[in-house]
Image 1 (cartoon, rainbow, N blue to C red):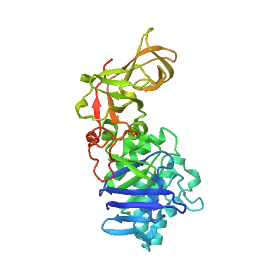
Image 2: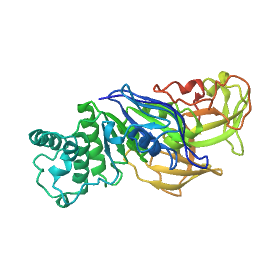
Image 3: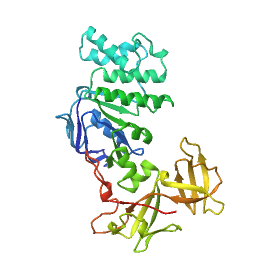
Image 4: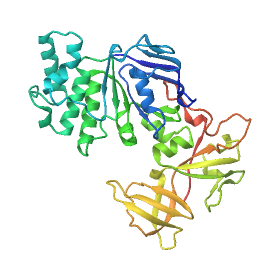
Amino acid sequence: MSSVALESVSLSYPGGHLGLADVDLQIGDGEFVALVGPSGSGKTTLLRTVAGFITPTAGTVRIGDAVVASPGRSVEPERRGLGMVFQQHAVWPHWSVGRNIEYPLRRAGVSRDERRRRVTEALDLVGLAGAERRNPATLSGGQRQRVAIARAIVARPRVLLLDEALSALDEPLRDRLRLELRALTRDLGLTVVHVTHDRSEALALADRVVVLDGGRVQQVGTPAELLEDPASVFVAKFVSDAAILPGSLDAAGFRADGHPLVLDRSRIEGAQHVRDSAVELAVQPEHVRAIPDATGTAIVASSLFGRGGDDLVLEWNGLEVRSRAQGARCAAGTRVCVEIERASVFRRADTDSDAPDTAAGASTTNSGTAGSASARRRTVSVGA
């Protein structure tokens, strides 16, 4: 297998629009990395740049020790030693399952006996042993996607690229294939780059997650690091659906703008390191507890059943806050008191300060290591 490295990669389209901007990313040999971000963030563009369908206008792309892309030079996709699976499985209906899977081996001039052996091996790996002669039309959507995965790995690629490979499948099939795909890639030691719109899927599958916005890497980290130590308000909102409360921090504590929430400074961990008075508080749904109380200042606007607790949307003095606290059960229309168990504080983005930024939102982590977002923001504990 092989590592992937992007060094100062940018992509500028005619007219000046940036598809990628100064992306530095190191993906280790055998690592599973997921790319997430809102529509237009650059995640598919980044994947297609690695694949060779797009040539960067600046920077270099390496696979292993070889430079496969730089301005004015790009190694063809078929010569990069990659396997790729798309959202639509693209299994050719006029060929049998076996012939679909052996196609990359035919192109590579592999002997017939070796092709048969490796097709059998690939089908066994994806749980379709003995399906060589089947017509793709007789397969379910999940089985056809397994065929596409088998075709991608049969040539023993250096890197496996997944472009929304599971998003067209229904639950619980998608959930089962996630488990099987992660086990398969780990057993084979594959380096994987996976683009997905599904944040839960990214967090469940990946060793590290890359969060992009506007063609720039906003943070790279393990799933736990993104949830527990977001680098910015954007990451907290996108990854965790955090509610954001702008406010001020002074000697007494935090006071929200236009909202009754006030926090004593003694309850803010690391407040002595926050030098800017104008800050933003990011509150993740898992850290918001709704307690039924007829005198409460919030109302449950909507309630969706969840296995561990209801997913609530609270209307709290003009602020919309989500709550996914473990074990909480509240019907829509219930009046509640809100308890925030934990939050993150960031320097407000519109603050102009020359002081060293030990609070929030200073710089993002674009490198192959996750880095520490705690140098840029401090976690706070919030009372009832």
